[in-house]
Image 1: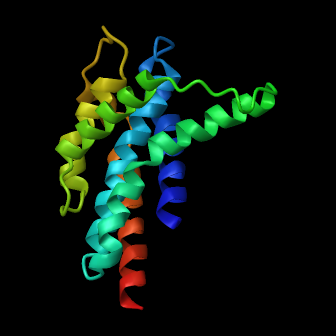
Image 2: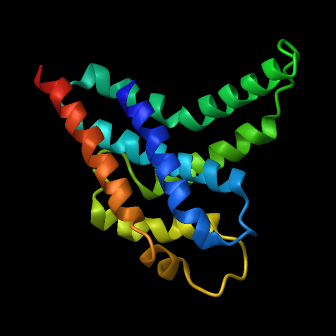
Amino acid sequence: MFASAAALSATQDLVRLVMPRLTAAAQPDLVAEETLALVSTVTARAAETGLRDLPGVLAGIGPALAELPFLYHDYLLGVQLIASGEEGDVDVDQDVYDRLARKAEFYAMHLPPGRFPGPRALDDKLPLWMGRISPPRLPTTPQQRLADVDATGVLSTHARLVLAFAQKVTAR
């Protein structure tokens, strides 16, 4: 539970941090989806690292945290349906789930299980994320846009916090 709430908060922090650097051409939905996919993967890796000594818990934590983008989409869709009085009339858009799965797979490939996503790994992988969320033809590189913000610091702090919480659970 803690890691899920932390992931949503870190996602919001990162989106607020980078949106001004992406110009008005940025697609907020794309930025949010992509960022949640990244943060969910970072969260899963941090929790997995902290729970290494609890194999029974470890087996389920990574997959559960990887589901966050899908669950959050379902939550937002549910809110929209209830607000419009259409609850029960849910048409599943498989394209959305396929798109989210591709994003999750991309970050899972770049942030492999069993490895803590520390500042060095994040510095290496965040330009990929910035490139994916950036509108075409911006005058700066993803690395330059990242240099203007402390995305690594935000995500690194998040990962360390999730790790510490998981280690505290392990110590009980």
